[in-house]
Length: 217
Image 1 (tube, one colour):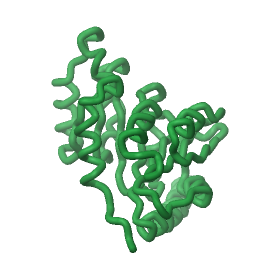
Image 2 (tube, rainbow, N blue to C red):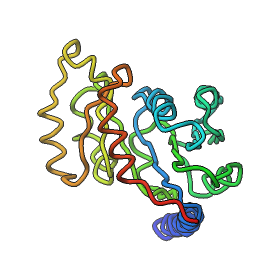
Image 3 (cartoon, helix red, strand yellow):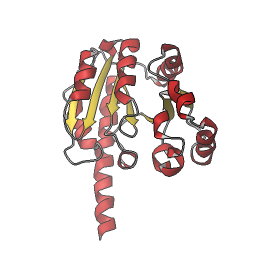
Image 4 (cartoon, rainbow, N blue to C red):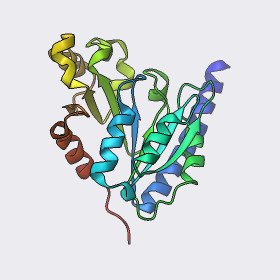
C-alpha cells in the first residue's frame, strides 16, 4: 500500500511538471533546475549569471525552508524573483513551481532559474517541469560526494564544480570526481568554475546559450 501511495504522489507531481514545461515552452523560456548541498554557491553563481545574461532576461524561483535572504540577493541583482518557502519540505515540488510561475512575467524572459532547496537527496526524485538540471558540487564539500550521492549526479545535464579557487588549499582530487562520474553519468559536461573568477564562467555561459530555446513570436 505504501508503494502505491508513493507512486500516486509521483505521478501527480509529474502531471503538474508536464504542464509547467508546456507553459515554459509556450513562452519560449529555458528552465534550469539548480540542485546541490547547502552552501555550494548556487545564489552567488546566479548573481553572476544574471549580471552576464542581463537582468531583464532572467527570472528566478528560490526554494528555501525559511527566510527570503537568497531571493532578496537575486532581486537586488535585478532579476524578477519569487520566493518559495517549503517549511519542513526538503525539496521543491512541481505544484510549488507552478504557483511560482504565476507570479512571473515570462514575456521578455530567456531563462527561468529554479534554485532548489539545498539537499543532495530529495530534489533528485522530483521533476519540476525544467528543461535542464544543473548540479553543483563545491570544492569544500570534498571529492567523495559523487560516489555517496550518485542519484543526484546521475540525472544531471551539467555538473558544475564550484569554488575551484580553493582546490590547492583544500587538496581536492578532481581525478577522483571524474572517475566516479564515469561510472554513473557520461553525458553531462563537468565545468570547473569559480564565481570569483569571471573567466571561469565563460564555459557556463556558453552552455546556457547552447541549451537555450528560441523565443516564439
